[in-house]
Length: 187
Image (tube, rainbow, N blue to C red; front, side, top):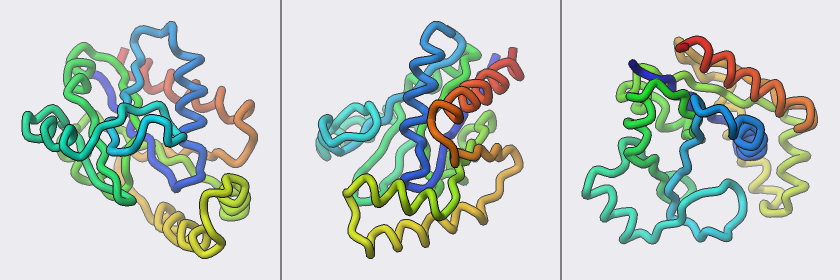
């Protein structure tokens, strides 16, 4: 039996981390759905998603031992998904992970059960969210908005689009239902 891999992608500020955290909390009793932690060369207290922090040398050692079936580099950091992913999929579980748009093609080649979930948000809302974070300059925000536009061109035979223009209390439950519907599709 093979599970399903929900590969969540979206522009920075689209709300992926918030949606995934909401879903993790609301699906914690569903043993058929698991959320993969990313291994990242970023300090554990850097904010954002709940991740496993690794030094560059730790990341290299795991990569050398083939412990990351999926890995990529973005924004000066390295990201990996641990080999537990293969075990979960072999058990028929639905695995939800935070992926990378740039790595989607390669991930799809390696995992035919991959279903990309694109979290979309309007440019106006994205600009407001990025501004409210206070982490980027005005020029950085404009650059992120330009990169976000590239997501509109994304295509994949299994692509699911998810609008995250409303408040989390509204979209969070819809995201949970999207995950549940995909999990039921393999049951």
